[in-house]
Length: 291
Image 1 (cartoon, rainbow, N blue to C red):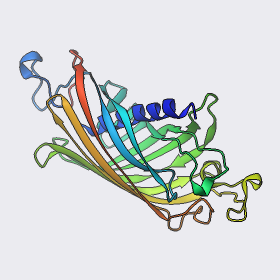
Image 2: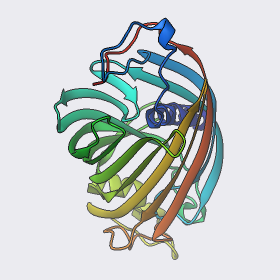
Image 3: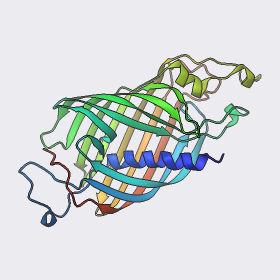
Image 4: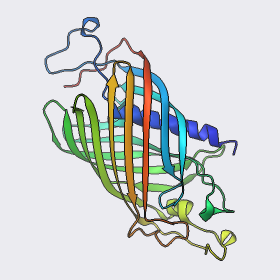
């Protein structure tokens, strides 16, 4: 499809923001920066880079077919007061307190060319998801090198087409354990939580219209509700001006309301990837010090 490549590049850009979010940038040369207050760390306001990512992605959660991708990976970190793309992800901060914050989170999914289960059906376009996330912090070390929190993102999903359309809502409450600078300077994160979607979102992925039904693929009207759970872990590290990162994600659809869809061919999926980026530019202006 003509829109497949631009869609993949957009998804790569979104993944670049999130990949940048997984990285903890090293502080600039102290000799070139103003003296920071005790207990504070001052980093560039923004950093920009470019690299490549290799990914293994299922066509969708529940698909028994996966594809390999090699994509250019933009690397972008921004540490503004309200708009941020850092180790917490790409977001706009709406409210930030000691234990509680609200931001706008972002996610993206690659397009899926038809596999055997969807033969003769319309192809699934790439999509972007965004919406508010309420985050509650349970524990954090004084130096912010580790923290444990509950994240509750509620996102609206839109297709990436010449005429984008809303295809429903998703909700993914999950626990997140984050470590910074462990095991020789690596950053690591572990997440796990449930996945929910409304009927329109599930029908977009798993519904089969009467006109698309076959003897092997009966018509199916997907309900909204519980869509299984996922677990994800990732690591990253900066080596001077080079950033490397990797992740692995496990999805399980056992007990999901869409498990009876003829398009769900497996109750589990594994997604993984690795990326390398070169950071070639950074702001002379420093971000507000992190206490």
